[in-house]
Amino acid sequence: MRSLFRYLIRNHAFVLFVLLEAFSLVLVFNYNSFQKASYLNSASRLTGNVYNMYHSITRYFNLTRVNQELAEENARLRSVMQEPLNNPITAYSVADSQQVGQSYRFIPAEVLNNSVNRLFNYITLNKGRKHGVKPDQGIMSVNGIVGVVAQVSESYSMGLSVLNQRWSVSAKLKKNGYYGSLAWQGENYRFARLYEIPLHADIERGDTVITSGYSSIFPGGILIGTIHDFSQPEGENYYSVTVQLSVDFKTLSYVEIVENQEKDEIEQLEESVRDDKK
Amino acid sequence: MTRSLIKYGFMFVALVLLQVLIFNQFQFNGYVNPYLYVLFILLLPLSTPRYMLLFLGFFLGLAVDIFSDSLGIHAAATVFIAYIRPAVIRTISIREEDRSDFPGLKQNKFSWFLSYTAILVFIHHFILLYLEYFTFTHFFSTLLRVFLSAIFSIFVIVLSQFIIFRQ
Image (tube, rainbow over all chains, first blue to last red; front, side, top):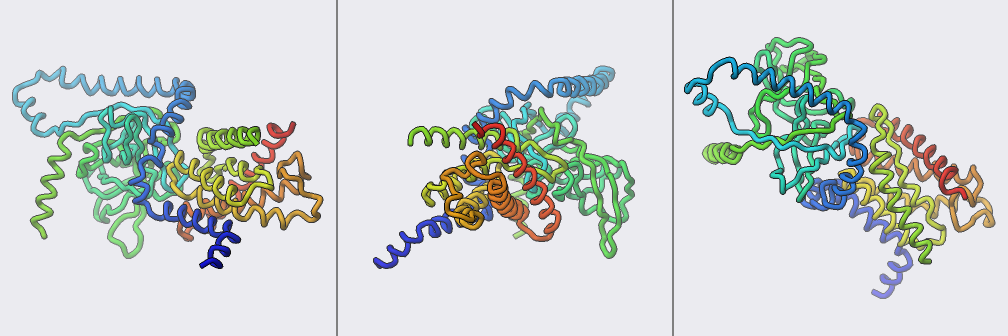
């Protein structure tokens, strides 16, 4: 026993090295530990505050572009508003929209930190639990979908962006409604891959890809991007489709967090059906 | 003692902030990302106890990890270079009288500092980027990233020695 201690003390550097290295590798390979350790990410109070302080200086550099985006969004919303104003609201149309429309709430947020050059890119936002943000809410910008919230602290939140290989989103073609799942491949931050579009679907370059609305994270019909290129791999039943994302993640500054207020109800319903199948 | 504690404490905080706020935003083509913060490990005095070196390496890496949501990969890479640093110094120093207690550019020859930086930075980037990519399917594109980022980091580190730490 004593010689063991003597050995450990003599080689304390090596023992310590092995311990620290093993601990780091456990953190790397055990992705779940990262989910649990909410204080070890960029949404925690300390890191969030540092990013927030820094952002309060750098936000001025983007003002011109942000203003332009807001003006465009205003114009777009106004043109959408025009239609109901022209058509007088009837009892029928009110009832109709209440039945069909799920109630979504949007929380505006600012992007504090964001990356595009890693395999697992994350995004830090300046809204948290006290503003009503919860995990698994969608994040979108004026130009299209951005990601999903993963961790929430008191006043900050952190999400997976589309540019994260641990996440994929249900997408469909606007033209004919064929749907598949969209995931990022980890190379160019402007492009993602759309899977499971069957060969008999009629697709062309430039076709619009939107969210399907089948998941309760995003409402249907939000822009994802356009088809950049596609091919038919031999011996497969599906196209290989490259989608150019409509959001430029390098210039992202303002986003909205989407809250589906009927999400719990939908999930309960789906859960009960899943139980029946067993 | 207190003076060096303040000096290195300040350097630790400054390098972590520089890394996460400025250098993490450098994203040329998704290939090049300099990691300047290893400079802290490079500049610690040679007389630093080894356990201290390892702990400092671990906490430095962990701090950068927490800010960049990449738990563990910076810590693993930095602990590794903190462990091999004494061996690297022993290998590249020829004569006993070459060594001063401080491994900075001011106290050493340019060629010595360059090879010291190059070896440690390259090993650090190698571990870091392969841990991030985890698979070897992208072996060559990752190797290219390692080389480009390492060259950029070495350049910035040597430059920083000329600008800031040379009084």
